Length: 103
Image (cartoon, rainbow, N blue to C red; front, side, top):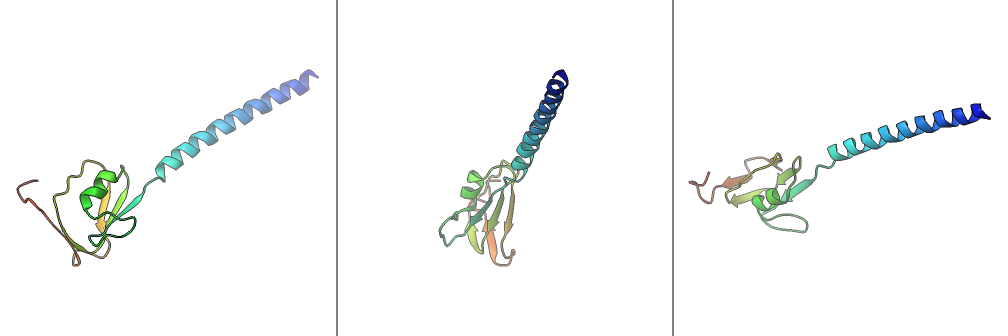
């Protein structure tokens, strides 16, 4: 009887350790893959931002902002670690400073 109890306790301890490690790994990998992709389009549309600054303000660290073709006249202040890039290249996506002295 004592042997069964001891085996059950060892199994319970192993199961507890396994569950703890699994939970930690789940939390780590969930946090790593939570980057969101935000879109900016000066023509508007469902689920997109009209201005780059609006997308920057809504973004969290690690997010990606894709700017669709168009001309964006605005000053953009970035204070977090995000990625911003054009969907189709700089030839068709132009960003001009609304106030060139504000930098």
